[in-house]
Length: 258
Ligand SMILES: Nc1ncnc2c1ncn2[C@@H]1O[C@H](COP(=O)(O)OP(=O)(O)O)[C@@H](O)[C@H]1O
Ligand SMILES: [Mg+2]
Image 1 (cartoon, protein in one colour):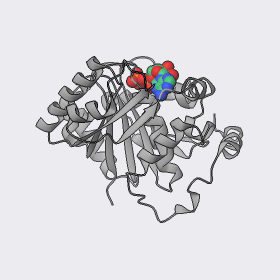
Image 2 (cartoon, rainbow, N blue to C red):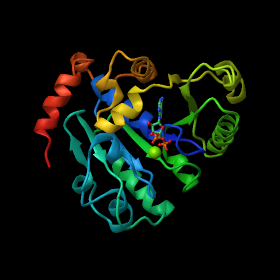
Image 3 (tube, protein in one colour):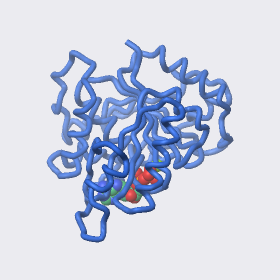
């Protein structure tokens, strides 16, 4: 089976792409899939901060620009069970070419992962990358500027043959917000997920523990798990489902390879 490639994006920065990518990847892994999370925000990588992966010598730019082997760059993240290709914190922040990305994607398509999730930079960085993925998830907040740019991004994806879904994040249910139904009308389809504003998120980032493991019963975690349920579990190993929690995460931290 070839892996299913999901591109997480937005037009605006700071709307929750990395938060969503980390939590969706962890949820899919919890459901028994094998998941690779790629930090594809070349200029501003932050997956490592969310997961507590620091001081890696190699990052995604070494694969793209310096022909490093994927196996030399990917890191097992024992607390979540994910494999992660972190961003390059220093050096080589040059934009990769279409050919360099295509080569990377061809290699990834030969891998054994069920899902590969790309956390990306805001906007259209190398737009042709869209045609190499299976699905786009566009994150928006319930504000007009974020919603309209989300619609523009989705139209751009159509040009590259990429189907996209929308996730609305940081919903506070305030009167000044654009209502979920209105956003869905603008976008032309139902939202894949509606995620509430939640204190669990900054707390989980500060603790380097994905929110869905830190507080599984929070409204934010429930909404992420509901979203992850849209994706079929490709593995027959469903016994892992929801088994790992904060305790196993902490045990994982002690086992963490440095
Ligand atoms: N649902 C949420 N509730 C509260 N804070 C959130 C939520 N989603 C994101 N944030 C906060 O917004 C900031 C930006 O999130 P991040 O995932 O890094 O965005 P992006 O990757 O789009 O730049 C983070 O500091 C995070 O704590
Ligand atoms: Mg980010």
